[in-house]
Image 1 (cartoon, helix red, strand yellow):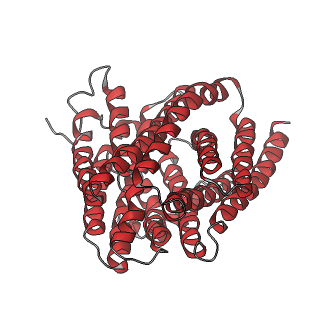
Image 2 (cartoon, helix red, strand yellow):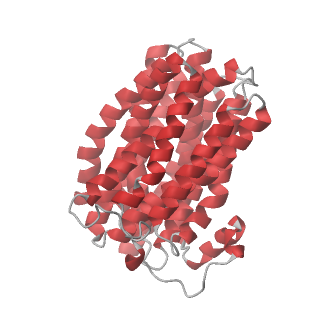
Length: 407
């Protein structure tokens, strides 16, 4: 049997739960190093701005190559892209954990970001390609993103606990699990080639140019999709500015270990399961998400605004949990809105562009959070609130235009 054509479990009814198991395992591994990164920076005596600059480097590579991965999904099985992406991500983390200079940290994060983006694009496209019913596809995307959020929070917890042993332990376990994630798709994922539109032209070397992939977006871009992508980019700025600053803030201002970072994320994981399995599924089934995503976005903005009035630990933690609960519902709603405005010919590229917009927002959110933190530790939180406030205004414009088209 050719492993690149079909896994040994894909002929059974169990292949979809096994695919979601892969999503969980990868999401866990992808977050093992995050809670120990502030400690890593302190231990290696690196500049404090590196907590934001390093992530910005990763997001930059992710942003540049996500459209290319989306385009590549048209040509080869997405399961093979998961394999390549996980192995490349593992190599990036090996460089990262070996670094004692800022340049090596940035290099490691860029290599990791280049390949991690391919995994996220491939996982989304796998569901879109193999799920023909639009309602079921939306529910599967909600399930996947819910599992990603919960597993990411659990990964923070596990990584934080491993960080108590040593920062290197968290990295080593992460690398080993990423290698396992690279091999699993060969066994548990089906070949999605029969479900995809076959491109008219063969893949060329020029298609590896990330800017060429961005230029190709004009084939599917519409004014409404552009507004959705603007919302995605803005909210990603806010999310990454808040998250990266919060992780460093509780270490710098309250002197808490990486274990606390993990515990807070574990609480978020539990709340996320409850919210996405009830509220988000109800919104998907019973409402028009082109309208109902707006209140969720408003609640994200409101919770971020509330944190500006507190300077003690408990309110910070409460706002962190509330924000990420609403943010966990925002993600699948926006992703499904992109999927609904795509077709079989361009869905892979649309999802690649979706990942690119997430990454572009992450670049500015993480970079600015790192650079302005030393000026005033609250400035990254102000940036996060401002980004979500502007995104909410863009969302209002989107809903207004959508209502006109429906009328």
